[in-house]
Length: 264
Image (tube, rainbow, N blue to C red; front, side):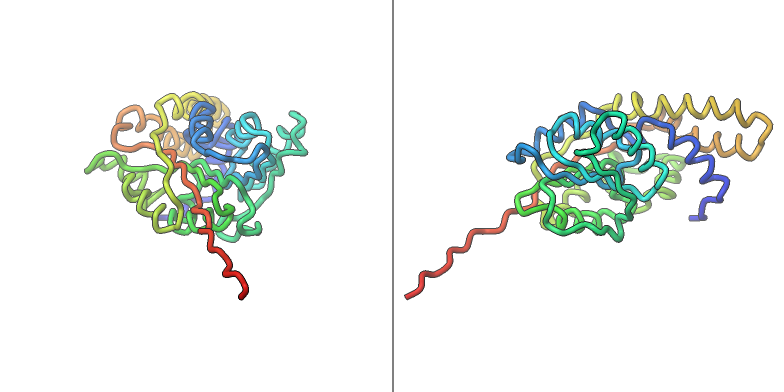
């Protein structure tokens, strides 16, 4: 896999930084997953890993009364989220932080809820789930989304895009096996509905790409990159039955109670 050029990354961020969210998801799916997290304290301590510009972070603030640390490695996304947090008067509850998931400086066993939508693949699902396990308190919850294959033998153009972005992508059974190996216990899982791909992600992406096509009408290199980025929603329209995003809700198994022998 070739490394993206600086110009590609410039255009990529010009598209994605302005979207409501940087991957599939919506408020209804976040609420459904959160409802599966039983026995959360009234004001849970939450960490949102790979938060992007924070669409789901703000949803979690709406759906809970807890405090949230929102972490992303892309500083402009954190700056945008920080602005929204301040505008909405949520600075006492949401703390946006620039951080790297592969080297996260957060204390272990300190969160009631570890959350991540569409970001764990960046460090590999096995390593990411070990990280989530360690961050959560015993009995705490880990909820995340991950892309999965739904059918064998996807068309070459579909396979090529995912091999570039997520070469180790597996099926639901592979994610469930990784969950078990990590020491987490599955509560339930479900697939994101089609509107979770389009309403706040692909439809705004298509509008943004059209806007930038006008801005870069005389720049052939930029137009070629925009055409490349536009292939993703177009591919989803044709081949969405081959892949999906699953929402997986798990729990760190509480420590077993071991009675202390009475002194004789």
